[in-house]
Length: 130
Image (cartoon, rainbow, N blue to C red; front, side, top):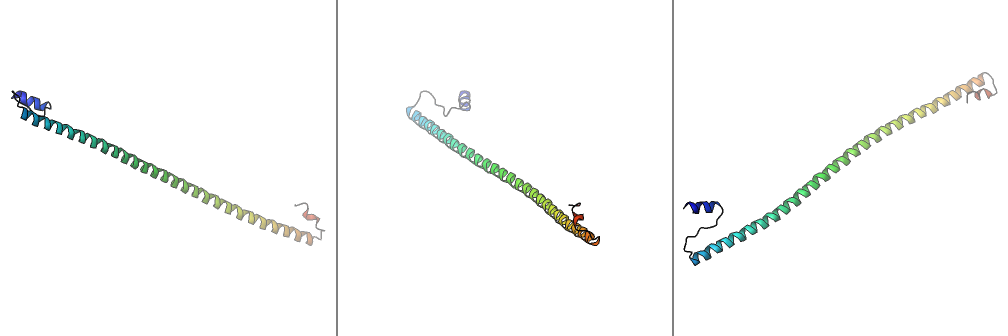
């Protein structure tokens, strides 16, 4: 009996006693072939499931990578927007300064013209300033 238990533990599908009875052998072989067929079917389904799992993981990884790219582009757009806002602000300040400079230039020109008129010069006094 110990040999039966140890054989089954080692992976035997069945144990037959001697002398072998052919009807029993036929049933045992049918069970063995059925088990082999089922094992092949399970292995085949496992391969299919493994391929599907790899495809899903790849698809999810692709989605995650695409999301990272989208997030990176969004971050770059925000940085560009901030830089443009800064540049616009600086240009506006420059335009304001240039406008004030033009106004001051006109005022200075008017003051010098007035000064020349008051001093009764012939207008040549402006040439030394411009």
